[in-house]
Length: 155
Image 1 (cartoon, one colour):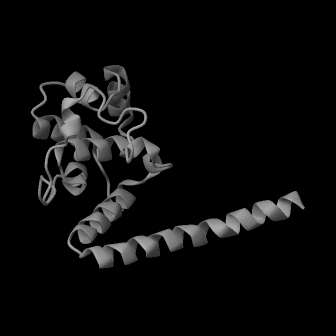
Image 2 (cartoon, rainbow, N blue to C red; image 1 turned 90 degrees about the vertical axis):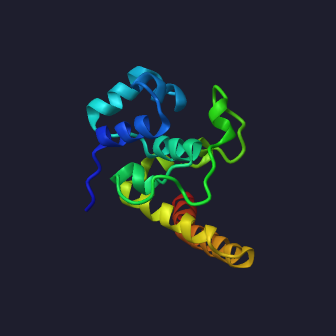
């Protein structure tokens, strides 16, 4: 099992983005400095914040978590959202806050998601469409038994 040192993750965030202190990191993530301090004390940072930071600054999630590999994502460019006060504010289509359960991902799951995205970026459109369809089918199949159980409980 991989062990993530979140104080090191926060330091990599600060250095890679050229931010002078934790308050600036907090501001870029739309959290209070106190919230960031609490994450640091607990030794855990919500995964959606790590993904958000990586997206804003074009960084590799693998590198943010482990300090190994490429710093920048291949083909990444710094998000225009970086210039805005609230890069993933309400109503931002495709924002990370709209993905249910993202904060609950483990570091291992984040690395897996990162690898899937890396693979998808190197594929042609038709293959990516098939891959997306396949993932959607798996998600739907995993949710169907829950729905059936709920219906049985109602009867």
